[in-house]
Length: 285
Length: 285
Image (cartoon, rainbow over all chains, first blue to last red):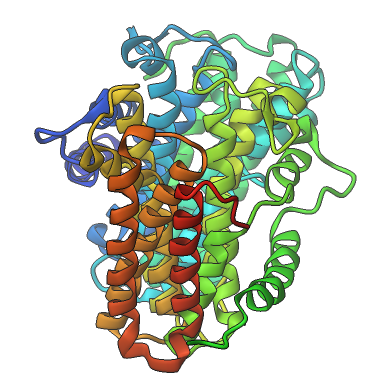
């Protein structure tokens, strides 16, 4: 039994992440040709659970670091997540007109502007992380940026998008579905674990373990989301068993970090509970 | 009078840049969903003058560094340049169907694929630079990545794209035209100067001067291109005078670097000669 209050933990850190994000985005000021800066704010500051920043912070704390050290990486990951949504929503991609009850960026700001807003957010992510974090060496910042690029790029998130498009509706096996989840979703969570570990002062093995933790968490999170959204109905029982397995692996990876990994453990438990509640037809938070 | 052979200098370095680029792109191997890796190669390895890498290398040499130290930054800049062309060519942007006599990426690989190829190249640029360069500290790599992001993003190249779209055909004054050139073109050259200076071991003031050199060179280069392409005919005499002025400022910035800045001087002279030949109606090389 744990008395750890995950809701309070997330709420507290979320305030800090949202403040850091507002500071990390370019100020609109008097000069905003094409309303690009406004579009960047619109894309990032529209809410969402900020799960990638939360994982980054929790990994940083597990490695023994302070929240402040994880904030630039957290902002960078959220910007990359936001850019990917802006580009995914484009007419040539998913052609989505609404997201979280509001017009998507290309609807609200125009199609060329949405392409550029995505490009600007992706680029800004590296600028924000590159400026450094309190008490984190240049070597660690450069390594964190490289992790970010690797997991966001062709061997990570973008590669997952490509795979998803190439497969189309043709995913009927859990292992293929999981391959897409690992790239499209897991990669950014893996980056969060690695960046948090690096900025928190973790050694090489710890950074690698936190990266694995992030990858497994991200896949489990996506399976839980599928179950919740009634996607992949045929694979539901298999997916649920897989969530249990992945969460178990997460817990094994977190164990050596001791009490400092309490937030990671609580997050993994939350995903497992969410998946089970969804499978049972109960709407979890 | 200088006996410096710019043609031989560029040809020699170009071989090294092309080899480094081929190594820096993801291998296609057996697995290339959506042909994204093929699209990345298609976009980058289709020729071009490799001017941004040349500036990066020349700046690195001016600061006292070896070519090898400048190659990761050179590749990163060329990838960013290539991504910007892929996204600029998209139907929602310039809707260009051909580039250098070949179908553009969205024509050859598909529209969603072209968006992702651009995203993947932009991301890969940071991965390649982040992996480091021989003899260059992590601090300098992190600083170089930050320069890259700043000049490529909303306050640099992407901001220039936005300004260009916002202004449309409405550019009738040289200072406004130059503002667009500074952002759209100059910023990446400025990044080349700064990254070359950083990776070549330059001190803070030298890096700043090489960054300024790059910005001025980039603007002059774009003016020369306009004159060559018969664009902005009404502004031609003014633009030519401005090229002379910018090249003079470049030479003043290069002077303290002494003989090691011979390539920078030759490059600036080449741009001036090109602009004058174009204005006189003679096709320069």
